[in-house]
Image 1 (tube, rainbow, N blue to C red):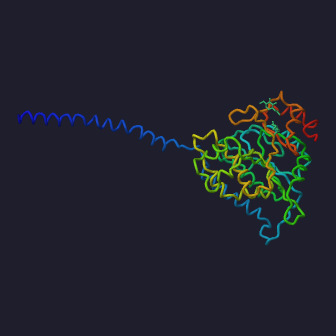
Image 2: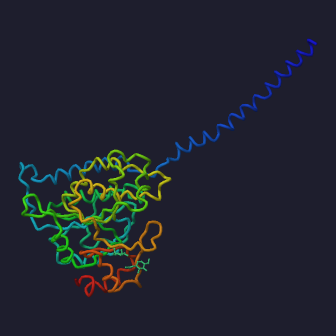
Image 3: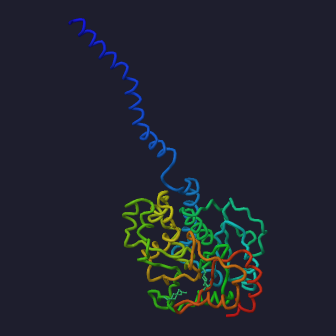
Length: 371
Ligand SMILES: *[C@@H]1O[C@H](CO)[C@@H](O)[C@H](O)[C@H]1NC(C)=O
Ligand SMILES: *[C@@H]1O[C@H](CO)[C@@H](O)[C@H](O)[C@H]1NC(C)=O
């Protein structure tokens, strides 16, 4: 009996020992997915790329200079330095490919050299094959990488605004454009339309009018909530409550005081510079929200709430608007693109494929620059 018992005990012991590898295997097997998920989290970030720290540091320095430069007076106590010339329009080109329509812009600019400046931010990764035409020559500002679905497009626009603020105190309006944009009117018409804004609110003294910014500001658009939480739930709180979150075209014309306001901003930028979650990539268009939200919060009366850049969203694919091709270019297209539903005319339009240059040049004097 005793012998039998001992044998039984030994058997049990042996069984336990032989099951150890099995237990270890089981534990490993169960923990594998956990380890995998953790490793994935660490090696594969859950967010899209954000702003590199070095770019951000350079920008902060540039924006500080722009803010100081625009504080006016260059140190002369309280006395605002008068702009040394007539108000100018700063044309800010944000591009990641060749400025194919430069010859059309040259015709647009010709004869108005005292009334405008050109600034170009070209993605350093872009290989520009065309050599710059006279108005664009030497007008490229120090640029950094830009990507869709990232706050880098906001940074590039702010960089252009800052460069233009520092460069010329006469810059009164700042028009953001892309390489796919074309003018719809003559320079003279464009200049007058911007400067003689009948809706501009009077300044407190009543003698002059505040210039308004031409920026689209929309609320209650479908999908706005998804775009609001694109960086994660609740991350925009408290600086940007959902009720104050706005959307609008990336392409605007800002009055100088609003350009200053944009390069001075730190409060909203802290939120908008955060990268989107990868899972929200389809709702990640920070450049369509930052500017309208900021201006709506700071100076709603000072904005027209509409954009001057016409775009055709009919049958858009993957967030890209309709791209006009050469067979579509005609006098009647130009006239249709100019027409808006209100009291103003569109001044610019996008988006045009590069091979539209020739048909557009053919229409330049007879249609586009005829107001
Ligand atoms: C807008 O694009 C659509 C095709 O996507 C085209 O049929 C329509 O004519 C365009 N509208 C204008 C005003 O060009
Ligand atoms: C004008 O309004 C009509 C009707 O609301 C709309 O279909 C059309 O797209 C609008 N046109 C422009 C240029 O906004």
